[in-house]
Length: 258
Image (cartoon, rainbow, N blue to C red; front, side, top):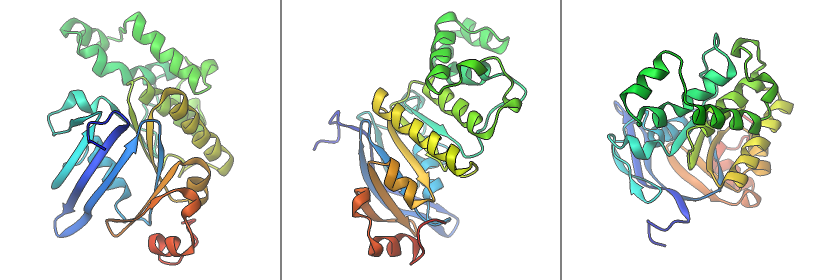
């Protein structure tokens, strides 16, 4: 298919990234359809986090192309990068403020584009009614409607991650990047959060790329699995096609629950 085909939310071509003499990404290639959930598996150091940081613009690749919504991304393409949002392992929230304020942070780029007065307004705590409504709707979508005005510091880890997801949704992305979003959560809460990603991806047609350590989670919640080893893709296929040989390629013979 043509790279501009509307079926693909993101296309990555020959992506490379090194830190000094360590080449972390060695020519990564993949395409992800709209609404598709892709799990990235690999040992620590395989390049999973660097890959997501390059896609998000938090790291500058040494080579290759990233195409989002049919447009090639460059470091100055802030408008295109608004179409992607990132959910972090450590939540990256403001603990002393309430849920609604944190979620409204996802609206800042949209609000600031409306002009200087709107930008000044956000600095003094003023947010337009439309943006507040969007934030509240996304808080409800992640099941925290009763926590809208509670401080982040009073929430559990799972609830804080839900706030992080609501914040990303408020950016109105077409792609969500999630870097080990359940690594610090207990198994029950982890499954709830991964189920939430699935529901949002399918209901809102948002492509989701999730870095995971646990093979079982990827098999259960992802449409597709990409396995990374030593900066290269060693598997790209359906969860049911992950066999013992594939696990050895990704994990070097371990059981995939690292």
